[in-house]
Length: 103
Image (cartoon, rainbow, N blue to C red; front, side):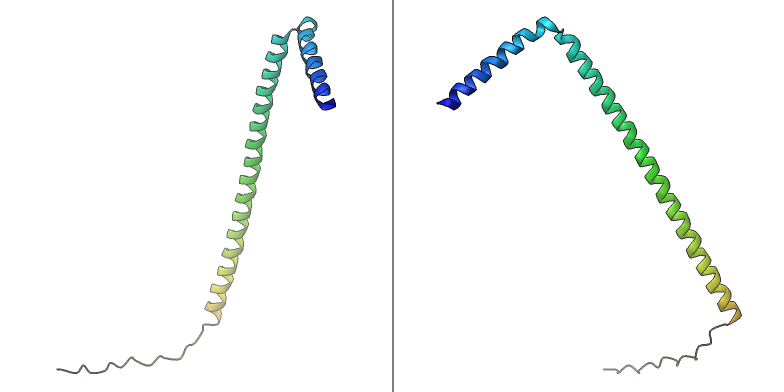
């Protein structure tokens, strides 16, 4: 019963406050300013995401360039070492074919 009375008091107090509020401030101005602030905030958020995406893209390009340099250097060194010391392999045995049986 006490909870019901408290909820009724809270509801009537909130409705009285909301009915008194338009006398003190212009509600349409507040709502329009809030919407404008929200739109500006979303624009700034989108701009921040685009900036972050640009930074990530540049970092990925940097990593790709470094990997290309490292792999190119390793391949170049490997090819020079093969030119200086060629790897000698044993001659492979020729493959002998089995004669086909005629039936």
